[in-house]
Length: 120
Image (cartoon, rainbow, N blue to C red; front, side, top):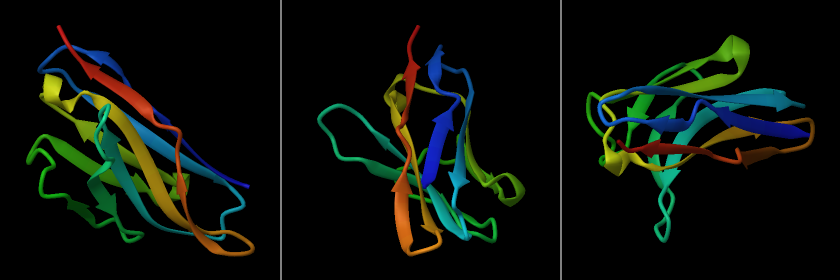
């Protein structure tokens, strides 16, 4: 059984910062790319950033440049998303996913999501 668990979301004022974490655990043989997505009500889930197993981060075209930074710690099977100078438009549920090989197969797993609300 493999699980992804996000944390770090919450309510923050405009201009504030949050650091999201997503930990992969369970029967992990190999952990490949890890990604962050976000979704607002009535809209599709959009990619924010991806981090390769080698730690290279790439960002979606619509990801706020210079305000969001994705990274990972392979020793902890964790991906992070540092979000600075947050704006109300960043309000969304943030999800992580990861390509994981367990003892039987290679699959993409999703976390349950963490709510980020930017409001005064």
